[in-house]
Length: 451
Image (cartoon, rainbow, N blue to C red; front, side, top):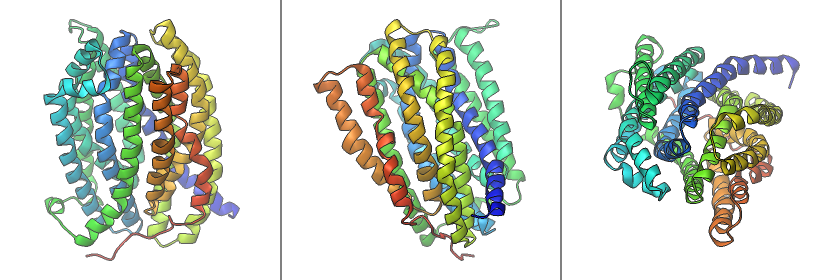
């Protein structure tokens, strides 16, 4: 790659990755603020809310897959400057996301105790988590629609505005958490339920803002007729991209749910330590998600414009970028680990678990950089989402999950050993990444000529 082209890549990546990374950090802070506030309350509250939030996590596997599949197609049509058909795929994503979110809304509001019993047998955790779910379930409806618009906002070149939205959401969420969880200025202390109310407020606020943006954005074509528009070819294109993304997402996501269920069976100490570690990883992953999002948009636009060779050259450079990012992730773990360790009010046993989990996270987050940038950015930009599904199936379901279940329930190995085994799937996927990349299955133009 020539120096001028390399400079062009980095300039474009910076304009996309920096705001996307900031938004990823802010989004992580929205989720982390609940854990941070509850972490100063008591251990059972943070454990219960972490388990209760597995429901919305499963929901986002579906709605996130819909958003990702639509985003890939919207990006390619956007690169082609075909805004009309890009709007049709946006409407398709919104329509499908609303239908999915309704199912999870009903589960949270009508059957919260049953949902909690999937993850724990602790009656106190079930009671706290059920109360939280009855309230927070309303936020699912707002979230599903807002995320579709935020996807289009990034592709439309308004990533900076999406960062401003996320920043406002973080501020409102943290302030609302503080007053509602602890009870300030005459407001009763609601504990975990206060966290649920704040989530509903910020998700509703996000939806209102993005609807106003879409109304004013000339290139976002979203007339009412788009929501009833049907094209057999478009449906085929969407499902060709969506099905493997969903398979991969469900495979990975259900494995995370299994992880949490195993930790729940190992006790409150293990659950709390694993929850804090997860929050730490989410906060650190913001750079990786920014690069992955930027790479996906860049590669998608090039492929949609027919610049296939240039897309290959960009892909080659992303391996070097992933390596540097992996080192940054390791450094961030080392830097934020001590403050995280001392911040939370955990038992001595939970703190011991937390220290070991954070140490292993250095290796985990290095591998995460490669896997995320390519399986969530470069590969799906050209419609190649099958590799992620296959790699998750073998690494997670044929190796990590069976080994960890045996280690936990048959061999009765220590908590930290079980945790490391469960998280090795991210590490074992890395050696196969380059081998698949060199097949260039991901180098495809997915657009059609449709009026």
